[in-house]
Image (cartoon, rainbow, N blue to C red):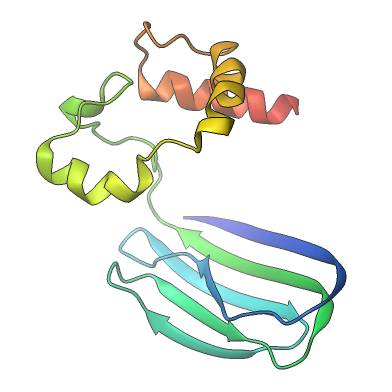
Length: 157
């Protein structure tokens, strides 16, 4: 068993006072056979009224409602989990996902449709130029290689 500490911090500074609308926060990992939450703490500044619920995918969702205007928002969560799966990244990759870009089956494509839309036209050229430095559309790659490349790219910035 491994103990992991997950610390999430998000800070917003606004140019003036704003009235925050309700926030939907997904910060608590989903427990299961291989993962147990030992402790979880969520701090919001300004103070918010929290209401916890479960969504359709069994995620813990915190709904935060704010009363007063503010020029700053801080969301800080700390979670300690016990991970019992000694090889969490040892899993089977579906046949359609062995190489990128993926060829989704009809049902999966329908579920993912909201996430597969293209960015606005004005942003596509800049995104394509940036992406072209790291991946060429004509090439195929294994997702695990893409994930490693993204991790290296992220660590270098």
